[in-house]
Amino acid sequence: MRYPNGKKFEETPAVVTKHHDTSRRGMTLENDINRSNSHYLSEHVANIHKKPTPVTIVNVSYPSRNKAKITEAYFKIPSTTDYNGIYRSRYIDFEAKECKSRTAFPFSSIHKHQIEHLKDVMMHGAIAFVIIRMNYYDTDYLIKAEDLISYYNETERRSLPYDWIKEKGHVIKRSYLIPVDYIKVIDEVYFRR
Amino acid sequence: MRYPNGKKFEETPAVVTKHHDTSRRGMTLENDINRSNSHYLSEHVANIHKKPTPVTIVNVSYPSRNKAKITEAYFKIPSTTDYNGIYRSRYIDFEAKECKSRTAFPFSSIHKHQIEHLKDVMMHGAIAFVIIRMNYYDTDYLIKAEDLISYYNETERRSLPYDWIKEKGHVIKRSYLIPVDYIKVIDEVYFRR
Image (cartoon, rainbow over all chains, first blue to last red; front, side, top):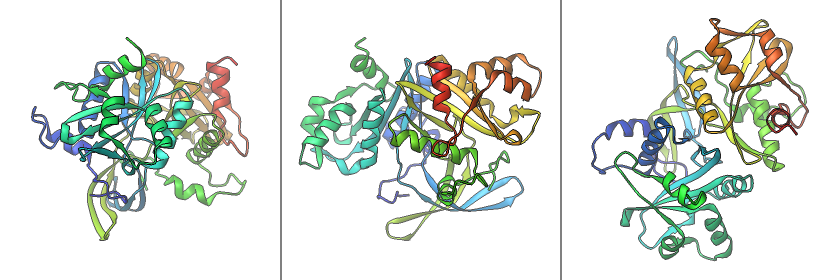
């Protein structure tokens, strides 16, 4: 399945339940973050969720009396980021992207209004960032929205160079229970624990 | 369109664009809150959005090369509340419901895990509440999650009596630009402005 912009679509709940093994085969960043969020939720660490995929519903039929079946719908371009919630009384807001390139992360993979959204929630006092998985290096980075946006505004380039990501980004550690332990990075970067 | 639980489904964007007149005919609470949120967003007052309706996507076809058409999907029962965001550096989280009864608001109109969710985000330091529109009285109330939950836990009843809503709830004023001005109530109730 593909978004209008060609981005691959994964139906998370279905996929997640398929992967109870420790193998990382077929695991996506989204699944890993959802599993991390489930852990944070059940351990009362944080309450952060992925927003549902926005769709425009055109047609619904009623094959059985109480079951509505959507027979025509289309993907909508999201107007906000995919993830938000609360941690240590702070509003958390972020977007997560995988990057197949080994040299740079193309700005085209983040919608312009998602960057506007990150800027706006930042103004309101949010902890805002992006998580980028560099697939080739199998490494996840947390990049503060401040850093991303200032580079985005200054540069002529259409991508974040890998060297910049290594310099400005914060490596996110992984454990089996918490595949993308970004809360630990938030503690270090935003709370100076 | 109906949710599995029989709750009426409204496709907001479509409906919203239909109502540019001042008449309140056909306006739903959801449309009014979305319009209020758009105003808060454009005036840089707050950044609060309704989450997309959660659906499970089963089948997608590709009638044209870059357009994905969802041909089979089903409504999912939401695991969180419908609205969240940030205001004055605080995480905001709420559910909004219309009530046709003139005597009480049935607990059955809020999913149990949505109440659990409100309790959980409250623990993490959120400003959490529900907005109830009493259709018969054409009045919107903001009810703090604290009040809702303590009553919910103590009572044997299966609904919030209208008298309780009048006593504990905070009336939300309406203007043309801001049909449900709940931010003003948040200022009074949570910030003691």
